[in-house]
Image (cartoon, rainbow, N blue to C red; front, side, top):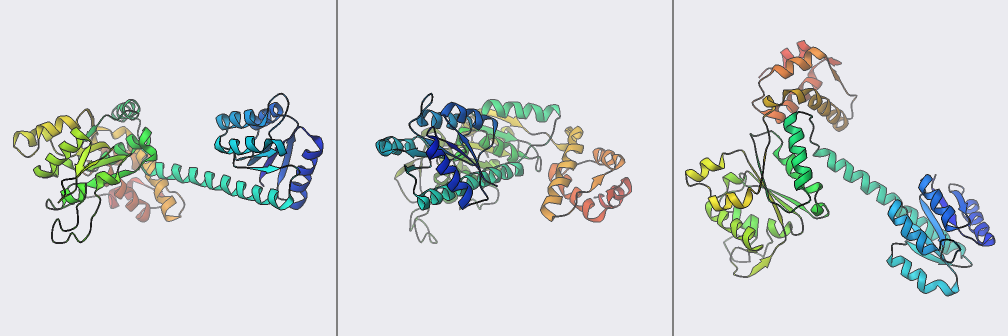
Length: 387
């Protein structure tokens, strides 16, 4: 049931508002406060879905209530109640974040429509927050080992800067999770996070993919097309498997990093971009540099901060937490009850040689959930987790 607070110092107006909201829609729970200070105390102590607040009040006026609310509970919509002489102030409060305003004496239809619209907005805000939490969970970094704790500490320090980060580690260790955490904890989290798998794009197309092209630049270029760097403007671009990028493309990436400008393939026009670059590779880039396959100047541009993600074999203490995380996730995805793993099964999984790292562990856990008993046993692990 939506909970509404009416803050109004005029008792007659307050009673009218409470009566309208209570009688016209018995699904609203309505509370009242006779001045701004009482209203703010109630807002601090209770969870409201909507606040109606008079502008002219003693002790604390409506503008002050609005400003205080935006600091303590910014998600609650507030509708201002204005007398005839308060209309200019009412309009200004909308610039400060008020949802809307209604005039005294309140018109029944106008009041109820405004309340419904404000409550709908509150519901959307809550849904968006839940969705963001859900998205964030998809990239959760699970583990309490020293290595993972060290990585989390680095992320906390680096995320709020625009420093470029190079993430290294074997395949399947979760390098993309580190990249997503960096983005989500940064000031750029409101902007896009664009992922590019450099190993999956043919070398002759990588420049077009990254920087875009103009119509006629090559045979299949039938129209202008923006590249990934433009798409990531004001956000983050994640260059996964950058060690597989061709030398010509490396030269263009280097220029983009140096000048914050790119050129579409087939064009000599500069396009300014504001992008944070995070790169990852499973290769030894210093060895690639020595063998002439990777530019040393690009390496030093990318590796302002180096983060090395350990192999699963080097963080076996995290396996029980990872198994629990995957069982939760798989049960949620499949709509089934969560299965448990016996202590012996967990111990056996900790003793395995995980050449495929976390990606392999996730697959094995899913296989055991499907094929194992209600509680996955040591015997189930021996039968179904073998390679």
